[in-house]
Image (cartoon, rainbow, N blue to C red; front, side):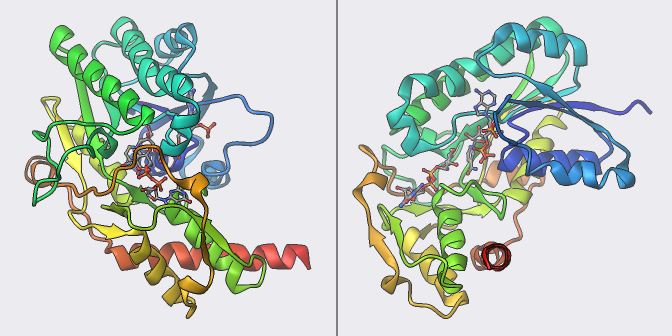
Length: 336
Ligand code: NAP
Ligand code: G4F
């Protein structure tokens, strides 16, 4: 049987790297778009080349950018993928307040550019749009959590850009009959999470504090609550959406919510340290408008897709702490 081809924007990010692992394991030929950078930005996928004796090299990287529509057209005409995963974005909520226009261009209009390229080059492909729980936040959360029918009310330029992408994806599905699905994913973390997102910022700092490489950790709002899941499990949800006959929109979430303080407690307990002695407040990490509480209701994804999450909040925190303890040990050895 002919190998399926997947095209991933954002392959160098947390989710893109897990998704590439997942699709290669399933026998796909994976094409990833990477941004040209003055220093290496492929650390999260380098292991795929190192393991190529296992799979053979079935991953191909192409330079490109979501702001460059002619490049997107060329790539999709050349690759003709069966599945497209649009994970590329300026994905940091706090940064989106500093760079609202850039975030709008990449995280919002970038999706439109990719949809247009797909419509021209490979209209039979299936398209996954990385929508976000940041579409919600400004209205009271229903008791069971936000679901696909909950009204949107974004609270940041990032959320506003993702809202544009959500509707562009839905409109292209309805207007042109294309197979396009929105995954409304709640926060998901892992040892590959970017180090400026709060969970990884905490586990990285904890490792360094434990080994005496760092004294304090500066954070913003500790009362914010998030529905934190395991990124490795969430990418399976993306793939499942594209295996359905009919495209649709799905919430992917654990249905459990914890505060930043809860995360600190579980993480610092692993290292037998009291977080209150190390964590300091820095107003720079506050947002002009905050999403205080997020909980997702993924009943539909569980029923239609058969998607499940298995990793508990504690297991996820422990895994990230264990990984970052090892990183700190290596760092200390390097500096010795
Ligand atoms: P991430 O680690 O920040 O990765 C973002 C990816 O987008 C990186 O590969 C980045 O490339 C790429 N990118 C940035 N600007 C780009 C541009 N102009 N053109 C093309 N690519 C560009 O994000 P993530 O956590 O993996 O999230 C994946 C997607 O899901 C994002 O769209 C995010 O907004 C969305 N999402 C994430 C979560 C979550 O909790 N993780 C939840 C809901 C939705 P570089 O490596 O070169 O920077
Ligand atoms: O880790 P965060 O930056 O993630 P946030 O804002 O929830 O966004 C992430 O999840 C979204 C899904 O809901 C994605 F769409 C988005 O791309 C991204 O992946 O912040 C989590 C919470 C916030 O309430 C923030 O105010 O932690 C609080 N926080 C407290 N101190 C901090 C810090 N956040 C960061 N990044 N850094 C701090 O020092």
